[in-house]
Image (tube, rainbow, N blue to C red; front, side, top):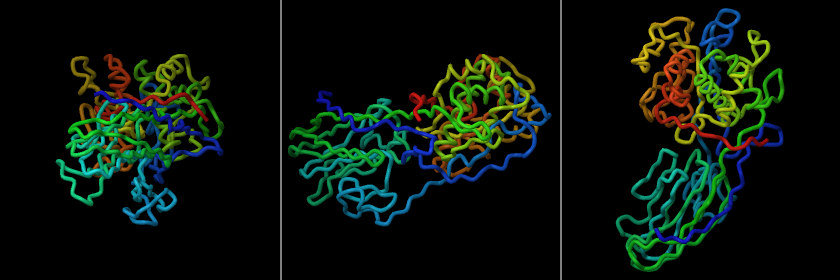
Length: 431
């Protein structure tokens, strides 16, 4: 493509703070999720899921609904004419002069010429969104096509829209238009709306079939990681250099190195989910959330736990761009590990020492999308896309087994959360 590129530096970095002076941005609206009712006795899984100090085992991290059904209400119906955001009701945004259901990112294009223009958006991962590729795994949806196969009837509204309803991946986006039929030259107006901020651009196209406009680029900031979390009884603690290593130590402290890295990714992801999606300001030092300090490790985390946290700094699991609630439990010790068949032999079916938690484990190896089994610790929906935060429950004993056979940390998560779980990395910490 021979397109002139314009850079639109219109978006500020999104900061997720946990203090009283900060609030989560719109794309992370806290869910009103109910609590899973964990058993009220016993300690967390440790020593590859062996009994804690008091001889019992419980789920490795606490239950939550893993997201709730989101819904918005509006004082004005969709389709109402508008000139600015304030004219639309709650849960609505003014998109190209019309009140529409609010999305985290909207790219719209309007024009008046009697010609068929096509809106194209290239995501940060390089995938192109347009009329022939209407939905992507990153959450884009081609929501409105003004003219089809060159049919633009007089008086027809000339508008095309691409939406990201719940989450827009961080990075650079590129936008351009194509004059599909070239019936006449055209000037198009592009609106980019991100978390309530609107920027408008103009694209110019000549009267040639297939002619492309200049290209506009804009940036959506990567998610900023919090520097600290507030733990009940301990106050604000450093997330990466204190909380994550100590959660690893208490939850599955004697696991092999790759399983410790997986534990760090899960612990961090669960903390992100609790603080950013559920909006919790205080995390419990128990199975209700995650165990941060435990009596059987009076000296806290060791060098191997700090190393696992450092090696995975900022890493957390997502699905289709959504932060997931990475549930994990002790699970059973696999009864017959076999290097020739780790996929099947590292399952805890028929094993022991899980003390009832094996039934919560989901084996989603090689599964995609809604073929996975969702976790009973969270809100199970049909289809699964109604709750994109619930992708299953991992077994700490199973992860240790797989790690002993050479599996890397990301593979240990895919085994339980599905083959399409993504490893995302948050930006620098910022409170």
